[in-house]
Amino acid sequence: MGGRRAVLGQVGAGGLLLLLAALAPAFRGCDGQDVRPVSGLLEADWTWLLAPHAYGLLAALAAALLLVRWEARLRALEIALVGWALAGWMALAGFFVLGAEGAPGVALGVASLLIPAHLAARGQGMRWRAVRALWLGAVECVAWYGFWIALEVAGGDSEALLRWGTYLAAAASLWLLVAGRRLEALTPRWRRGPDG
Image (cartoon, rainbow, N blue to C red; front, top):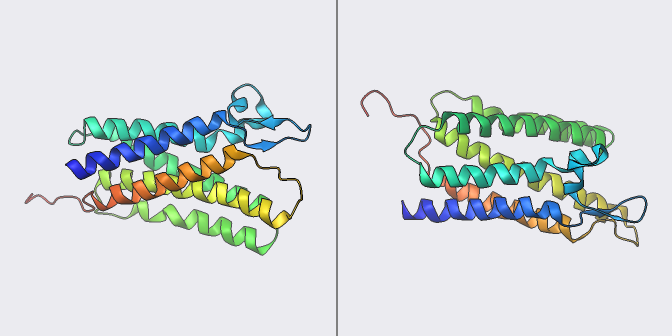
């Protein structure tokens, strides 16, 4: 139990860091002002920036609940995590199709739809699915910020548009990715049969 508690603490800390990155400047807007993802709460133009940070909140809450009640049935939390992963990957697929023109964007979009498909496999325990969905959400955030950073680097613009908040969110996403994978390794995958 000690190893799982430590990893859940790491997942919670990574989720909180990703949530707090919403307060940091993410990029420079067209008017030359820094844009923070939290401004999506007040301005409709920036609501799309909130998704990874909302996932950070969900990951931190999930880690806290799992830390306190690992043995309890948390069906609503498990369903929420799986639903978030599926919805997030569908949104990411659309982001890739619209953001990367031509065949690469379509290929990334199709791959994004196939990645969470294994969550529907039979015989897996719901807790493992929830933990896998937690990890897939982190993969999604890494892909989101990786795509942003790759576009910035590929653009070769002498004036960088991305600000330190984007790199902080990318680092928090990587942290969640590693901690989520460690948690998945500590979680039984298959449902127990009637024999126990």
